[in-house]
Length: 440
Image (tube, rainbow, N blue to C red):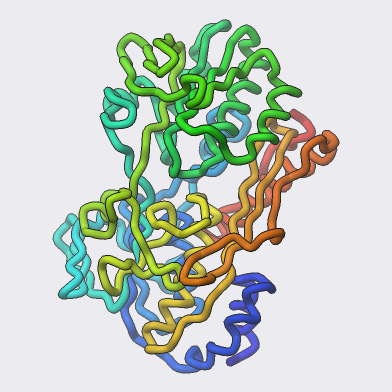
């Protein structure tokens, strides 16, 4: 194997995982004209398409994504709170075509014909594949959890849990709310996209309100007993927003059972609450393409082989990102990016009828409690006993009781992480100029 490819694989999986894959890579000296179609242009699909072409430039790789612009969920909370411009969340796909020769098809995928190994697009075009990768994100369980929450209700009580207009709607409602109003955030039962996201959102909403509408309150209603980075968020709230944020877990009546959008009412186990601004994050399942094509089980998510991400239900189809059940890995942008790299390695191996290697996976998640107050969680995972499992003591959380300078540094690292994952996934159009956290 040539040194350039060896270094590329080492960088893909990190030093810990790079050594594990080198022994099985002599196949990459050959060339293949195999056809791989990737559906979904987010952190999973776009990265997978890119790394497939890096691993084997002769592959015919087609990326299917209906939208010409991708709006990121990471840092959407900061945009909602007015800390960064909305336009800084936008990515495009030009570099994937220009620099890697990936065919970009802007159309919606409709149906998978596993017997004929074709993907039917809504415009009638059929794409043949040898292997198909789908990264379709999430779907909302409309009018189920909570009752009365449908697409129309989301215009009144936005979820803002997918990138795009919903973030603007929620931000505008926050700005229009009178001083002294109550913001209600409803957190769905796990699993859902970005487990720490609702609590970062509550923090940055509180920051905005403390600055502009200081008599206002934020009420978090949680359908779970505990949450990611709980101690760190609680410490931050006590330090920054002691009289502004109230938190009710499911054990204290925090389960939202129904909403009445026209009246601004949120119905909970603890009673009825009137919200001046309601951010209702509904329960979630795998994206529509996965659900409509037999890739999901009774959980609503996609079971996969944890080494290759091939569906256990439909042959020659791989599922990565939020839609898949990936063992101990959370549903996050970082997880999707890591799974994309592992899947691309495994897929090339399978195309050559060779055994895939067992890579190391990772997840990194930064949260902002204020522009100059950040903390993080990091996890490393491995394929063990046919499952993705957490490597104990290989990651960890930011420490409690850290200095404000430490928190300021982590806030800066959050911006750096965001620029890095966007550069890795979307290329040279990813970097933006950030406002200084120290100047806020």
